[in-house]
Image (cartoon, rainbow, N blue to C red; front, side, top):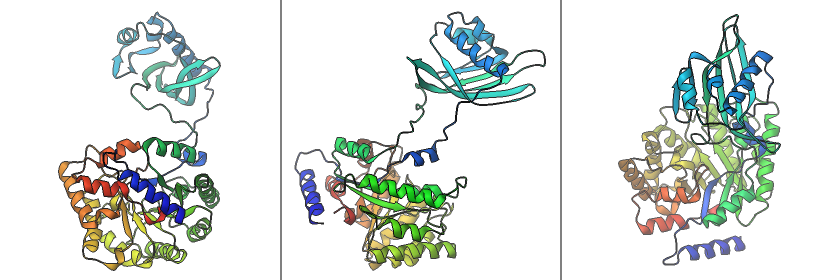
Length: 436
């Protein structure tokens, strides 16, 4: 603790220097991603082998693309066929031929899905090229097919995404502690709270998988191992599907692991409804356990209820926060789920009013601003958010990113708020108690 405090104080001193570029000292909402977690978000389709009459469409497509004479290519389409390439559509064989004049190259198409029924069918997959003997994906394609009984398959619609209009397909490499530290170093950010994604393995919105508890445990263990590589800079948070029957068992196990500093709960992902007595009992039990173990909680309390707002925050303040009077509790996304809509303001206003009134239940309450401020947030929303932040007190506002943005972009977004320099300096220097 003495070493961590010394590091924090030294970092704060650097950021306080006059004329220095102001940067936040910590990211209070960071994630890593294991290979197993990546596969939850990205279905990896295997290469398949279509029947010869369908495979012929792909080989002819490749041949026509590579040829400077596009008449053969255009003949693959129906009379009124459509080709999407770049930002435009070409309709009909003449337009398709003209759209691709001058284009050539070693295009290759890899099939990943197909289906045919009498006169209709489709085929989809990845297209790209070979570099030496290595396949390099360029984008995705989908072809709808038509035919008569006596004719071969023709293309009715061809859609090809490309790297000028879409993000290239994601790689399956994990996001490790080494990756995060490199990003922190580049941005001049000293410390980070690493929130496990293990809760994703039990999400009700996902297709049920076997060994859910084992996979949750494995993900938490992986995060603990990663965080242990940089114990002076990273603090790990265990997570679990909050309503799972094994939730308390797994959290009790996980918080005992080295360098696991606390617990992350995600009400939206776990389909928690604080208005449901059974759900409320489970959440209260987790908060009591965390308080007994003296481990902090980061909670994403926005629920799926379309009427989420004051009522939910009042329940949380009265029935949940009261169960953990001795530990820091950090509400993610300013009690919302990104952006700053009416429902988030209604929820946040309950806590802002309680803090302004000196409510003892809020003594250890903090809020992170990850994914809340964007360039598109209306001016009046920015002003309202700052009003709430001032009610809460700037020392309780924690910088966070939550992926998607670079540190520089997230910080520049925060600076869009009508905060004065002194307020920005306070937020930049804030460290949650678990990072001190």
